[in-house]
Amino acid sequence: MRHTLALAAAGALCLALVPRSALAHCDTLDGPVVKDARAALEAKDVTPVLKWVRPDKEGEVRGAFQHVLGVRTLGAEALALADRFFFETLVRVHREGEGAPYTGLKPAGTAVDPGIAASDTALEAGSVDPLVKLLTAEVDKGLRQRFAAAAEARKHAAENVEQGRRYVAAY
Image 1: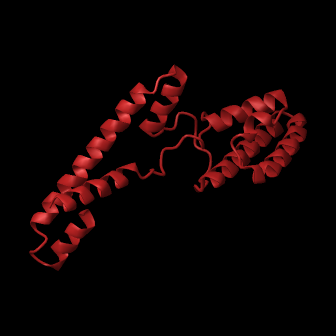
Image 2: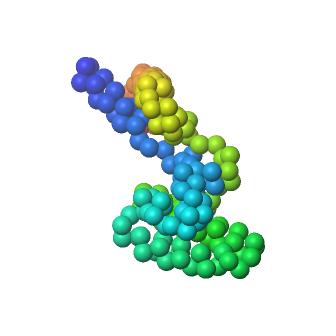
Image 3: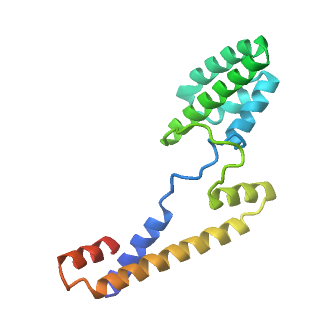
């Protein structure tokens, strides 16, 4: 019984800690990648954005940056289009480096995962304590929910194969 409970708890913890794909903010127009891209374009220096890409993709970003600098001088519409192209290129290459899909730039103000927002706040404030509190509460909540589901499913596991499979899935 203890072994089963320990395995269930460990499994639930692993599931609770699996990263969620939605609600990142590196692909938003007000996220850190685009903020650095804006600063790089203003300064005409690609260096601030290179930290966001893998070394093997640096050439692609440098090439896009140089192309954009030339196009930006052709007028306001060209500048806006060129900037957008650079933001999209940079975010796409960054997401690729994370192993995440690129689904386009999201508008400024797009909701972000509370954990990501709390991470940003913690870094800005110089204290990890609120982030630890949030994540600990989320892990606790996830473990309790998963445990309750597994415990409930276990009660009915012997009733039939379908119920048994529900238990195994929850386990």
